[in-house]
Image (cartoon, rainbow, N blue to C red):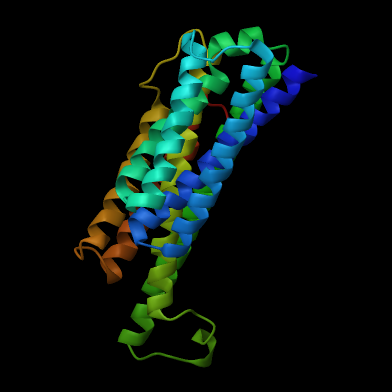
Length: 276
């Protein structure tokens, strides 16, 4: 019973941490104060849960948990979260906080789903299955975000051409404005990037734990990395003022074509991705 409770606690920490990183990414890419506050509170909850487990472990074992690699990784992750919170509260350093939490999240994933941890747990098989489920969930959510980006980009081009040709009629009144369509497409891409990044991190961990012959150059993995790179470049060029208006819309559409190709062709050619 205790083993199951601790497993659920670790899974909750990983999910909450992932959500926090997503909001930190949104804040970093778009300088959104609300996203920054939400991210901070999610990371604070992560720190609280980690601290509860740390105290519980100390009470249970009557020692400080740093005597093994498994314990050390967890303590290292807890320290990183603690440091990130201090930097946020005292020095207001946004970029270091973001990258510190990325490292802390990776350590937390390794601690929770490491092969030694899984083999020692009475719920090891379920743990691996749930890691795969979480990985797929975040991948699908990223596809949804990129789909929304594609939709708003298409609407932008339609609206742009209608206005340019002065063919405006009542049937177009339900379309968003050009600014709304562009902003919505960009926001969808910004949200999709960290979702896909988290999915890739969890997917790497699942493959490492579950597969005997894991090939990092698998077609689906390479395709997902290309998608992540493509959308990141789009967002960065927009942030620099080099990609906007119709060019931004077409860039999002072309990037979504890569998503479609990777979803269907990548899955069929992959050696261990079967449908997602």
